[in-house]
Image (cartoon, rainbow, N blue to C red; front, top):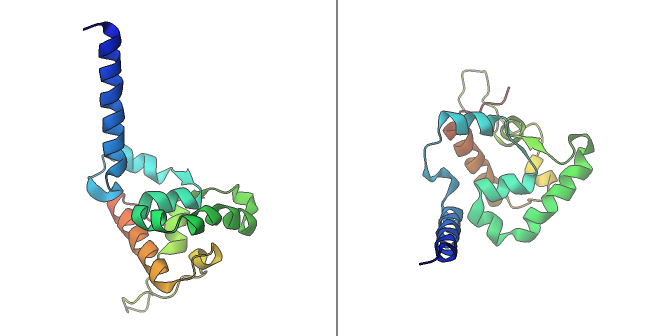
Length: 142
Protein backbone atom coordinates (compact mmCIF):
# COMPACT_ATOMS: atom_id res chain seq x y z
CA UNK A 1 0.00 0.00 0.00
CA UNK A 2 1.46 3.38 -0.95
CA UNK A 3 1.68 6.38 1.35
CA UNK A 4 -0.95 8.07 -0.86
CA UNK A 5 -3.35 5.21 -0.06
CA UNK A 6 -2.63 5.66 3.66
CA UNK A 7 -3.25 9.40 3.38
CA UNK A 8 -6.54 8.75 1.57
CA UNK A 9 -7.61 6.23 4.24
CA UNK A 10 -6.68 8.67 6.98
CA UNK A 11 -8.63 11.48 5.33
CA UNK A 12 -11.65 9.22 4.84
CA UNK A 13 -11.54 8.13 8.49
CA UNK A 14 -11.36 11.77 9.61
CA UNK A 15 -14.26 12.70 7.33
CA UNK A 16 -16.33 9.79 8.65
CA UNK A 17 -15.59 10.79 12.24
CA UNK A 18 -16.51 14.40 11.50
CA UNK A 19 -19.77 13.30 9.86
CA UNK A 20 -20.59 11.05 12.82
CA UNK A 21 -19.89 13.82 15.31
CA UNK A 22 -22.03 16.20 13.25
CA UNK A 23 -24.95 13.83 13.87
CA UNK A 24 -24.29 13.79 17.62
CA UNK A 25 -26.55 15.78 19.89
CA UNK A 26 -24.75 18.67 21.58
CA UNK A 27 -26.17 17.49 24.90
CA UNK A 28 -25.03 13.86 24.52
CA UNK A 29 -21.80 14.20 26.48
CA UNK A 30 -20.64 15.66 29.76
CA UNK A 31 -18.49 18.69 28.91
CA UNK A 32 -14.97 18.93 30.28
CA UNK A 33 -13.94 21.82 32.51
CA UNK A 34 -12.17 23.38 29.50
CA UNK A 35 -15.29 23.05 27.31
CA UNK A 36 -17.34 24.76 30.03
CA UNK A 37 -14.87 27.64 30.23
CA UNK A 38 -14.84 28.02 26.45
CA UNK A 39 -18.63 27.97 26.26
CA UNK A 40 -18.89 30.63 28.99
CA UNK A 41 -16.70 32.86 26.78
CA UNK A 42 -18.57 32.03 23.57
CA UNK A 43 -20.07 34.75 21.39
CA UNK A 44 -22.17 33.60 18.46
CA UNK A 45 -24.89 34.92 16.18
CA UNK A 46 -28.40 33.83 17.21
CA UNK A 47 -28.60 31.41 14.27
CA UNK A 48 -25.52 29.53 15.50
CA UNK A 49 -26.97 29.25 19.01
CA UNK A 50 -30.19 27.86 17.53
CA UNK A 51 -28.33 25.36 15.33
CA UNK A 52 -26.21 24.26 18.29
CA UNK A 53 -28.89 24.02 20.97
CA UNK A 54 -31.98 23.21 18.88
CA UNK A 55 -30.49 21.21 16.03
CA UNK A 56 -33.61 19.39 14.79
CA UNK A 57 -35.84 22.43 15.25
CA UNK A 58 -33.34 24.60 13.37
CA UNK A 59 -33.24 22.12 10.49
CA UNK A 60 -37.05 22.18 10.24
CA UNK A 61 -37.20 25.99 10.49
CA UNK A 62 -34.20 27.03 8.39
CA UNK A 63 -35.89 30.19 7.04
CA UNK A 64 -36.66 31.45 10.56
CA UNK A 65 -33.15 30.59 11.76
CA UNK A 66 -31.51 32.36 8.82
CA UNK A 67 -33.57 35.52 9.47
CA UNK A 68 -32.63 35.76 13.17
CA UNK A 69 -29.18 37.21 12.52
CA UNK A 70 -30.46 40.12 10.43
CA UNK A 71 -33.26 40.82 12.90
CA UNK A 72 -30.81 40.79 15.80
CA UNK A 73 -28.43 43.09 13.95
CA UNK A 74 -31.32 45.49 13.25
CA UNK A 75 -32.48 45.27 16.88
CA UNK A 76 -29.13 45.84 18.61
CA UNK A 77 -26.52 46.76 16.01
CA UNK A 78 -23.93 47.74 18.62
CA UNK A 79 -23.54 44.03 19.51
CA UNK A 80 -22.28 43.40 15.95
CA UNK A 81 -24.63 40.45 15.51
CA UNK A 82 -23.05 38.39 18.31
CA UNK A 83 -24.56 37.34 21.60
CA UNK A 84 -22.65 35.90 24.55
CA UNK A 85 -23.73 32.73 26.29
CA UNK A 86 -24.59 34.72 29.43
CA UNK A 87 -26.74 37.20 27.52
CA UNK A 88 -28.43 34.34 25.68
CA UNK A 89 -29.40 32.82 29.02
CA UNK A 90 -30.44 36.17 30.50
CA UNK A 91 -32.72 36.96 27.55
CA UNK A 92 -34.15 33.46 27.19
CA UNK A 93 -34.68 32.05 30.68
CA UNK A 94 -37.38 33.72 32.75
CA UNK A 95 -36.10 35.02 36.09
CA UNK A 96 -37.37 33.47 39.33
CA UNK A 97 -39.39 35.85 41.49
CA UNK A 98 -37.84 36.78 44.84
CA UNK A 99 -41.16 36.58 46.71
CA UNK A 100 -40.53 33.08 48.05
CA UNK A 101 -42.64 31.92 45.13
CA UNK A 102 -40.68 29.61 42.82
CA UNK A 103 -42.78 30.39 39.76
CA UNK A 104 -40.93 32.20 36.99
CA UNK A 105 -41.90 35.67 35.95
CA UNK A 106 -42.08 36.54 32.27
CA UNK A 107 -38.80 37.53 30.65
CA UNK A 108 -38.25 41.29 30.53
CA UNK A 109 -38.25 41.23 26.72
CA UNK A 110 -39.68 38.78 24.18
CA UNK A 111 -36.24 38.15 22.71
CA UNK A 112 -37.18 35.23 20.47
CA UNK A 113 -40.33 37.04 19.31
CA UNK A 114 -38.21 40.04 18.31
CA UNK A 115 -36.05 37.65 16.27
CA UNK A 116 -39.12 36.36 14.43
CA UNK A 117 -40.00 33.22 16.41
CA UNK A 118 -43.72 33.76 16.92
CA UNK A 119 -45.02 30.29 17.82
CA UNK A 120 -45.32 29.95 21.62
CA UNK A 121 -44.49 26.24 21.54
CA UNK A 122 -41.33 26.93 19.52
CA UNK A 123 -40.32 29.66 21.98
CA UNK A 124 -40.89 27.28 24.90
CA UNK A 125 -38.80 24.61 23.22
CA UNK A 126 -35.95 27.05 22.58
CA UNK A 127 -36.08 28.29 26.19
CA UNK A 128 -36.03 24.70 27.47
CA UNK A 129 -32.95 23.97 25.37
CA UNK A 130 -31.24 27.13 26.64
CA UNK A 131 -32.07 26.03 30.20
CA UNK A 132 -30.45 22.63 29.52
CA UNK A 133 -27.41 24.41 28.13
CA UNK A 134 -27.27 26.69 31.17
CA UNK A 135 -27.40 23.72 33.53
CA UNK A 136 -24.98 21.49 31.63
CA UNK A 137 -22.34 24.19 31.13
CA UNK A 138 -22.88 25.93 34.50
CA UNK A 139 -23.72 29.22 32.84
CA UNK A 140 -25.60 31.74 34.88
CA UNK A 141 -26.63 35.12 33.68
CA UNK A 142 -25.28 37.90 35.94
